Length: 88
Image (tube, rainbow, N blue to C red; front, side, top):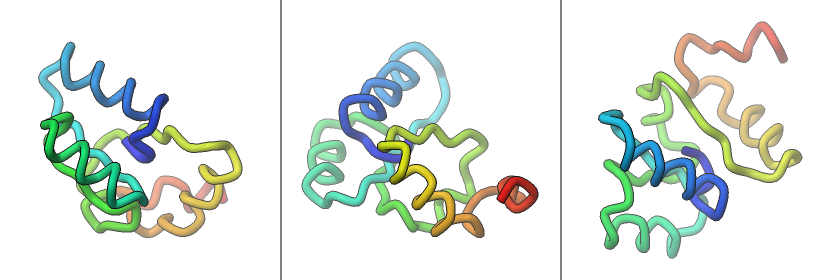
């Protein structure tokens, strides 16, 4: 889950609680990453441009719309199989 705020955090916590899938939090704010880690809210915490993104089968993006486009453009090579290359 990219952006572990209200929307992204809620999605991540629900996935973690109600499924057997691993949940990884990607957030730009070091304080958010620290809080998520200290409270065992997911299976791993990373900065948004971490290469771990490539290991994720599904990526939920909980950012403002303009930040979502910015994030995808900046990390296009970090997604599996470069799915977005054909779109953008």
